[in-house]
Each structure stands twice: as structure tokens, then as C-alpha cells.
Image (tube, rainbow over all chains, first blue to last red):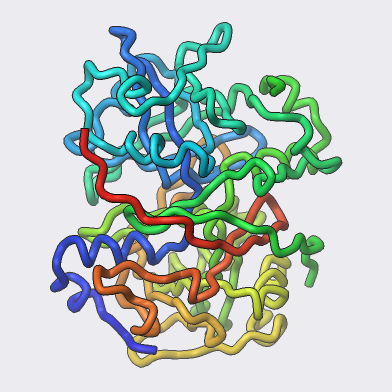
Length: 203
Length: 203
């Protein structure tokens, strides 16, 4: 076991440091966020910073990178209030990963990467048809994080599209059966295998 | 595929709904946060809402539940500014999970659950000796989230303790070799197996 202090870490080459720090927090849930611009251009982005905020009300957050690096998703959300979150499975991982490329705002990223947009009634933003766990969000607040020009985007869950067969008798979702994958670092992807469920812990 | 709208979801029994919504965001990184009170009582909490905020500066956030539900960690962080984040591996999962029990503030949770505190020089908060990927954080800001009384806690990475053998030539950390596990929903745990790493995507 070796200690690396922040001065050492700061001295590392940029990509080495980014790999290391992006891995440090662990395997992450990874999804595609679907949006549409006011000019009706659909957009997809790969997001691995989705975080559960609470079940009642049902709130979910994610970190949007700085505007210069990732403008389309946050601008579409700001303007339309509507977005979808779509789990990624291994069978469309190459197409999903390709959504991390920085396409011009006028490019339809579904067409560019080869995924299928799915529009549900009364929902503005497109879903990813290939995804088997997908949900609809409505913007609650965009909180700027002053320290690094990122944004904490808070949304309220509106509806969920899912195969009933993977929902357990107690509401637990079998995401191993759904094939929902994880990301690690900047460019790694992993599959999950359930170990156990443990009883509610009491002192 | 079936659609469940938010009114249906709200009508569900509380634990069924909590299981469902906690699963919805996917498999999550899970770690133990180590703190110490001004009265020198060490504390541990299980946190599955850790999120990477940026590599330069190296910032990491997590969501702290409302004070009434989880007072000790956030109060210790507020008072001492110091905390540690420790990956969980399968061999000490039962002890780690037990840290989710709501112990009284005067209880030393390392003793209560059977984990080993490790104090490193010049670092106030205790690490978990059983953990093989652990890092030291310093509080940057606690942002209250008004919608559900949770808190977004932002910290700056200070140092990392890790076995050099799991750091790749490009800075990527082999967390599969480290055995870092994931959580799902309220009480599920999973192991991760790498699928691939993909090249940087360009349009």
C-alpha cells in the first residue's frame, strides 16, 4: 500500500491523472441521457454521474460537465425541461460509447451512432429503444458548481418503462437480468453479478 | 415493457417504492466514509451516492441523507473538515453493511461492527484497514438540497492509499482485482467484471 498525496497526483500527466481519479470513486452506473432541442434535433449523451437523491419525492441528479465540453444536453434540458435516462446493455455498448463523441449540435446522434429513437405519447424527449430500463425525467433545478464549472442537474422522476418480469415481489429490480452495465474510469465498462441482499441493519 | 407513471409509483407501499426507485439508477459504487467527532468518537457510514465531480481540481461529491436519518457523518465532517472514503470488498461486506445501522453518536462503530480503524500521520479521520482502496478528503462545501432535506457534500481529494500493482501504465485502476463491490437498491450488493475499454470516441 502506497500513499500518493495530491501534490504528487497533480504532477502527473493529464490523461494518467484523469484515468486514476475517474477510477477512484469505483464502478459507476452508466446511462444515455436523451434530449431534444427546440429545433427538434435529438441528442444523446453518456453519463456516469447519475445519483439517487431520494425516493419520496423521487429525485435523481447527475453532474453535467462544463458547457464548453458538453453543451447540448444541458441546454436542451434547460429549454425543454424534459429528458430521458436509458440504461446501457452490452449488446449496444459500442453505439452507446460513440455518443461520448462531441458531435455538432445540428447532428442527430441517434442516426450518427446507430441507435433507435423512441417517442412515447406526451413525452417530449426521445428514449433509446434498445434500452430495456428507461425513465422520464423533468428538470427541477440546475445548480452551478463554482469550483470547476460543472452543474448538478436535479430532476423529478415522471415515469418508468420496464419489463414487469424483472421487478421482484418487494419492488427490487433485477438489473443483472436486464444486463445494465457499469463504467469505470474514462473508458472502461463492466458487467455486474449479484452477490447477496442483506437484512436491514439494526444496532 | 410497461409504463409506470409517477402517480402509480407514489401509490405504492413505502418499501416497495423505495426498493424500486433505489434500483432505478443502476448499480452504484459503495464505500465506507470514515469520520471522527470532536469528542474523538470514530464513525463509519455506508454511502452509495459518491460521484466524480472533476479531475482537476480533484473533487468528489456524495449525497448525505437528511440530518434526522444520518446525523453523525455530516456533523463530523462539518466540524473537522476531514473524512476518508474506503472501498468495500466482499470479504468484509457483512461488517460494512452493519455500518448502515443507526448507532448512537457515542458508539465507536469500528468496534460495534468489527472493522479496524487505521490512523495515518497528519490525517484526522480514520481509514478502514480492511479496505485496499482508500482516500482522504477535505470538505469544500455542504450544499443543502431544499427539495428533500438532503445535502450534497463536496470534497477535495487530499491523498490516496492504494497498492501500486493495481495501477495500470496509463493510470487506470484495476478495481476488479481490488474486489471493489457495488450496491443495488437499498440492500443488494454485486461484484463487477470488466467487459472492455473502448477508444476515445470522435465524431
